Amino acid sequence: MPQRTDRPKGMRARRDRNGAVTYYLLREDGSKLVLGQNFELACAQWVHEQQSRVALARPATALELLHGIEQCTLPLASRQATARRRSEMDTLRGFFTEHGDPKLEEITGEDVFLRWYGNTVRPGRPDSAIRMFRLVWKSASKLGIVSTGCPWNTFDLRKAQLKMEAADVVRHFASAPLSELLEDLMGRTAVTTVEFPGAVESDYVERLRVELSHAASRAVMMLRKSGRTDLVAPVYQLEINDLLSLRRSTCLALIRPPGSILLQHQRAEILASLKTKTKCSDDTADVGTYLAQGPRDQENEPMPVLTQKDSLEATTWPTD
Image: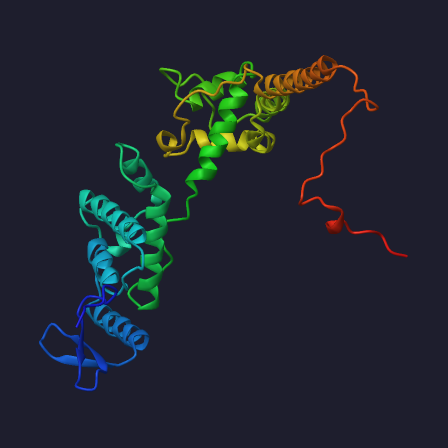
């Protein structure tokens, strides 16, 4: 009997003389739990049995929790999804292993994880690993293993990267002191050039806000000329509070733009000019071809020769 590739770990199948397949679970103590002949219901029973075993074991550390919840997870349908989930779990295991496998009540916020993730090049995205840990914690909460909310908050890496790209665009058109703040934000200064007191002065923030408004207007104009309309909305939505919060973020190494954006080429205007020249050239060529053929003498044109296919018998005459 061919083995199903989507059977979870520990589930076995046996076919009787009539050809009916019965699924059962082989426990660690050697006993068997019959799961029935319906595969979907058998999988549901398998999950319930695994969850009961994990809840009874009550994992106390991060690595134990990851292992226990992973034992309750059904196989995924696609290889890509399976590889992605394995990579996310391996990332979480690597993080908690390097941090001494803390107890569940000792797990801190996601800032420590983001700082650890940005120290070296790692596969995948940090926000997907955070999302996976939140799912693990949610499953543990349903099983009664934990009674508090997940210590890790949601994190949208793409949203933060988009704000940094918008800040990098504005940097090209900003003047001091906004330019100093943006240079420091992009990591282009050896030391921090913008120092804020404990409570940022309101007049200084207002000065930054006015300068940001002027620089954003000039940046949007150049973005439209360059054909980068995808960054127009993020530049318009950028605020000083966003820049200050990004400056204090622990994931700056992950969200900084990998390169420099070019905005002086005026791509949109050049393409429009080339299209206009091409259209004019085509029109001129058509006129030249018409003049080269000369005027047509309709009276001296030869009559078309009728073939057998174009005989009078095949002609359809109008009827009253």
